[in-house]
Length: 167
Image (cartoon, rainbow, N blue to C red):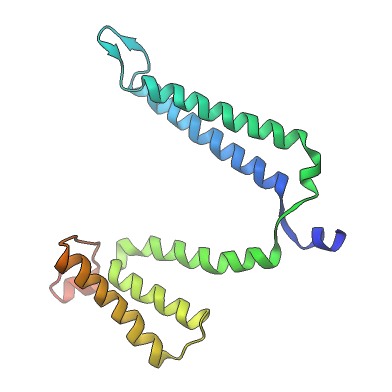
């Protein structure tokens, strides 16, 4: 148990406290914005924020209850939620996905998707570039045909599509 705890990246208690705080903050945001919209009962019925205000209060109460439960249960501190090795595996997918989503606005959906697929085939799949290039480009071409041509759903485009006159 001691060696497992040394390799733990986070305890169950720490994760529950973090999630409880996020839930509470989300509820507080709902309450704040609902109050801004109007959370009272007007002459003609409820204002726009009336029902969301109370839902937000319920979300805050739920977050507070989870927080209190996590703080009171000290046994959760000894339980490992995720090991360091598991966390590294999670981050090898999470970090590139965050980068992918953040560059779609600059590079466009198709170029970003091509690079994303190519990265995973190279880094995790250990494929040769002779296989990576046709698959990653082919998938993006298929996406283009399906979304832009067949369904007429425009997706974000970047400088390459502009240079090709596809904007």
